[in-house]
Amino acid sequence: MVEKRRVFTREYKLEAVRLVMEGKQSVAEIAAALGIRADMLRDWKRQVEGRPRAAAKDLFRGRGKATSQEEELTRLRRENEKLRQERDFLKKAAAYFAEQRR
Image (cartoon, rainbow, N blue to C red):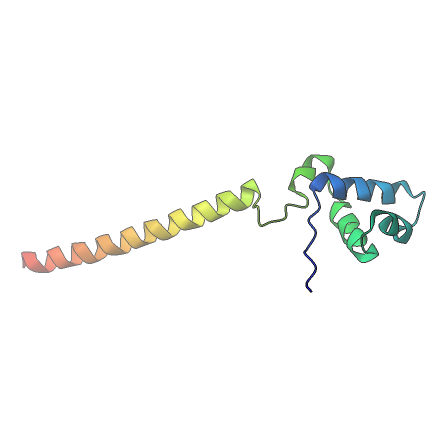
Protein backbone atom coordinates (compact mmCIF):
# COMPACT_ATOMS: atom_id res chain seq x y z
CA MET A 1 0.00 0.00 0.00
CA VAL A 2 1.29 3.44 -0.91
CA GLU A 3 1.74 5.90 1.92
CA LYS A 4 0.15 9.29 1.32
CA ARG A 5 2.68 12.08 0.93
CA ARG A 6 2.73 14.41 3.90
CA VAL A 7 2.55 18.15 3.37
CA PHE A 8 4.13 20.56 5.83
CA THR A 9 3.23 24.23 6.17
CA ARG A 10 5.79 26.99 5.80
CA GLU A 11 5.38 27.84 9.48
CA TYR A 12 6.06 24.23 10.51
CA LYS A 13 9.24 24.14 8.43
CA LEU A 14 10.47 27.49 9.74
CA GLU A 15 9.82 26.41 13.33
CA ALA A 16 11.72 23.15 12.76
CA VAL A 17 14.66 25.07 11.30
CA ARG A 18 14.57 27.51 14.22
CA LEU A 19 14.92 24.56 16.61
CA VAL A 20 17.96 23.35 14.68
CA MET A 21 19.55 26.79 14.63
CA GLU A 22 19.18 27.14 18.40
CA GLY A 23 21.70 24.32 18.60
CA LYS A 24 20.40 22.74 21.78
CA GLN A 25 19.80 19.40 20.05
CA SER A 26 21.22 17.70 17.00
CA VAL A 27 19.40 17.64 13.68
CA ALA A 28 18.80 13.91 14.06
CA GLU A 29 17.24 14.34 17.51
CA ILE A 30 14.94 17.13 16.37
CA ALA A 31 13.93 15.21 13.25
CA ALA A 32 13.13 12.12 15.31
CA ALA A 33 11.05 14.18 17.74
CA LEU A 34 9.12 15.75 14.86
CA GLY A 35 8.70 12.44 13.02
CA ILE A 36 10.52 13.54 9.88
CA ARG A 37 13.72 12.46 8.16
CA ALA A 38 16.94 14.22 9.20
CA ASP A 39 17.97 14.84 5.58
CA MET A 40 14.67 16.64 4.94
CA LEU A 41 15.31 18.89 7.94
CA ARG A 42 18.85 19.59 6.70
CA ASP A 43 17.44 20.56 3.30
CA TRP A 44 15.00 22.96 4.94
CA LYS A 45 17.87 24.48 6.93
CA ARG A 46 19.96 24.97 3.76
CA GLN A 47 17.06 26.75 2.10
CA VAL A 48 16.72 29.15 5.04
CA GLU A 49 20.43 29.85 5.58
CA GLY A 50 21.71 32.98 3.94
CA ARG A 51 18.23 34.35 3.30
CA PRO A 52 17.15 37.63 4.88
CA ARG A 53 14.04 37.45 7.04
CA ALA A 54 12.15 39.57 4.50
CA ALA A 55 12.61 36.81 1.92
CA ALA A 56 11.03 34.20 4.21
CA LYS A 57 7.72 34.54 2.38
CA ASP A 58 9.39 33.13 -0.75
CA LEU A 59 10.68 30.08 1.12
CA PHE A 60 8.95 26.73 0.93
CA ARG A 61 6.43 27.73 -1.70
CA GLY A 62 5.40 24.18 -2.45
CA ARG A 63 2.51 23.02 -4.59
CA GLY A 64 3.86 24.94 -7.55
CA LYS A 65 2.94 28.38 -6.30
CA ALA A 66 5.09 30.86 -8.15
CA THR A 67 6.61 33.93 -6.57
CA SER A 68 5.47 37.33 -7.77
CA GLN A 69 8.64 37.64 -9.84
CA GLU A 70 8.07 34.28 -11.51
CA GLU A 71 4.44 35.18 -12.20
CA GLU A 72 5.49 38.49 -13.74
CA LEU A 73 8.17 36.79 -15.84
CA THR A 74 5.63 34.26 -17.12
CA ARG A 75 3.14 37.02 -17.91
CA LEU A 76 5.78 39.06 -19.76
CA ARG A 77 6.94 36.04 -21.77
CA ARG A 78 3.35 35.29 -22.78
CA GLU A 79 2.81 38.94 -23.76
CA ASN A 80 6.09 38.98 -25.68
CA GLU A 81 5.08 35.90 -27.68
CA LYS A 82 1.69 37.43 -28.50
CA LEU A 83 3.34 40.64 -29.70
CA ARG A 84 5.74 38.67 -31.91
CA GLN A 85 2.83 36.81 -33.50
CA GLU A 86 0.98 40.08 -34.14
CA ARG A 87 4.12 41.64 -35.62
CA ASP A 88 4.68 38.68 -37.94
CA PHE A 89 1.04 38.78 -39.05
CA LEU A 90 1.26 42.50 -39.81
CA LYS A 91 4.47 41.98 -41.82
CA LYS A 92 2.76 39.34 -43.94
CA ALA A 93 -0.35 41.49 -44.38
CA ALA A 94 1.76 44.50 -45.41
CA ALA A 95 3.67 42.39 -47.93
CA TYR A 96 0.40 40.98 -49.33
CA PHE A 97 -1.18 44.41 -49.79
CA ALA A 98 2.04 45.83 -51.24
CA GLU A 99 1.96 43.11 -53.94
CA GLN A 100 -1.67 43.82 -54.77
CA ARG A 101 -0.90 47.50 -55.28
CA ARG A 102 1.43 46.77 -58.17
